[in-house]
Amino acid sequence: MAESGRLRNKILERLPEPDYRRIVGQMERVTPALGEVVARPGVPPQFVHFPLSAVLSSMVVLEDGSTVEGSTLGSEGMDGLYLLAEPLANPYKINVQVRGELLRLPAAAFKRVLAASAAMSQLLMRYALVSIQRGAQNAACIQHHTIEERMCRWLLETAHRNGRDQFHLTQEFLSDMLGVRRQSVNLTARLLQGAGLIKYHRGELTILDRAGLEEASCECFKVTSEMYERSMKLP
Image (cartoon, rainbow, N blue to C red; front, side, top):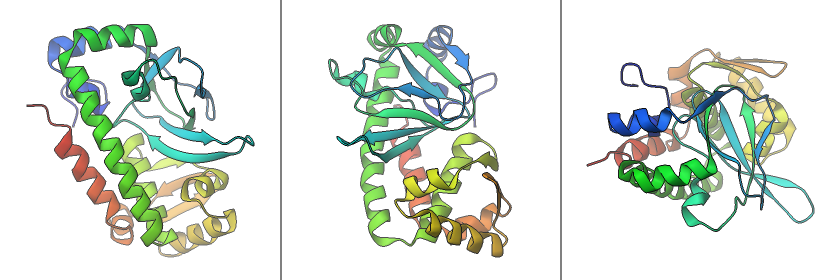
């Protein structure tokens, strides 16, 4: 839970009070449109983003122009980790998949923040480790868990990041995220609706039974949540 008066981003929440006030004071709160591209591959970014309620999607762009979902991030993280390895530019196309609020900071100011705040630097190194661990967990999840289990997990993670049990999701996005055909997404959504776990109509999804959705999910939602909380504790 956020400390009193603090904005809802789990990295920023963990900063010592002086660092928090100084860093957040330099940020701008924005609400970009659904689908808006906030960073492009190979292009030095103008801003880094710390989601409050928005969910961002990192897309890998292949040589033929097609894209593959790499990862999603929300209030647990930020989208500029690649700046820790300067001079590397952003390798992903990053766009808004669930509309909501973001805090953004100019990339140049972000570099100054890292130089001035040991706590922020340590938190982002820890978050980088969490992201690597999460990628390994995702690979195991894709290999061993059913589409239904994976969809339940992804919906729980999205609700957790967005802070709400209702959000807009297209079947096209879900098929990209899960790596399956849209027909499979449609069939799985019908199964979850039939079980009374969700309501899904014209891209608007509502979680009706969060406990039931957790029971139907694979263990990866719990594993990654516990991994994050364990790794993101400053001494």
